[in-house]
Image (cartoon, rainbow, N blue to C red):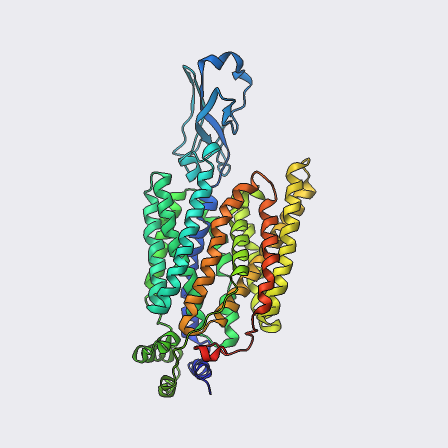
Length: 513
């Protein structure tokens, strides 16, 4: 019997998916709250709630040609070259009491109606979003895409670090490092006073996200038997956390309070993670047999089963290395997923409702992927779903383009929204299947390095996503159509990979040949 087969039998002897394994999965899936909220933060923090010109700087020589009485200040950036808006007033659609110019019930609201020299100021303003705090509109709107891309660069760096750290120091230290980084810099974000410093904060939050997201699935699947691995990965913690974020954003309605809440939740999750044992698969692969035996003993004690004899497994432990790659498909999927998750303004009527809906459709995606990959296999399922998602993305892009350039049509808008939601669901389905596929192909000794490499390539797509979102504002539908083409072109790389359905989780290079 091979070394990997012995480990599979050991897991079954420890109770299979017993109480301890369930507790480990609950704790790690709970960490998704901080991870997902940190990823989606800019969808609310960088949201443009609508604005009016608060102060219009006008050159004296141009006063004779400006009809000030008939001028609308709604989304007014400038009037030719002679009048430029230097301050803005932002709307708040979630407040029930509003004036002609915006909310009047916030403690931060301020009503000003005055003319001073050549400056015209009229309206109210609030500071719930970073957009309104730092006037990230008009010629400064690019800053939102820049901050989001900086976060995704940190995400990519975190994925690189995670792979090396998790395979060198262990899964648990890497996970604790990632959550600690998010807790620390979300707390720093609460006190940030400028967008430049906030960009640095979001970079390090991204590093924490990249580390945690790369390690969490590896850490879980190494504790459970083969039939349970898809279900462990497919538990819908991400869409549930995303929908909860929409509700919390609507409730708190203040980006700094959200930072503080993430910090408090993160501290609680850090405390619970301290009780999660290290992966005994990793410990054995590194010949840390004493620590591995303690980890196995803790599982046996909590699950209420006798401690199995592990001497034979320790004697046959292997240390070989293998690498596999399907980075192009991962890049395309991550680009599409982040574009749709962060670029909600392309289909948005109400930002909070859209955040909720765009993640609600992920629930069926998570629910069906586990049973379906077990029935049809990882390879076939990934290939088919990638094809379907590419078609839906292209159709959605075409519908959005005609919806924006033609006369307003309710039926066309509803069709674009429906197809966009279906596209998001299929992209999520394909992404989950790829996570299962990737973690099963790599052996234990380099599983985190391999998955970290795939995640890094995927995060490059996440870096590109804000730029595509920005371009989509100028060319409606471009973002969805581009992502659809990328997925279609990359799906062929899946055909070169071997099927992993029903295969023992490899622990060394000899198991992958």
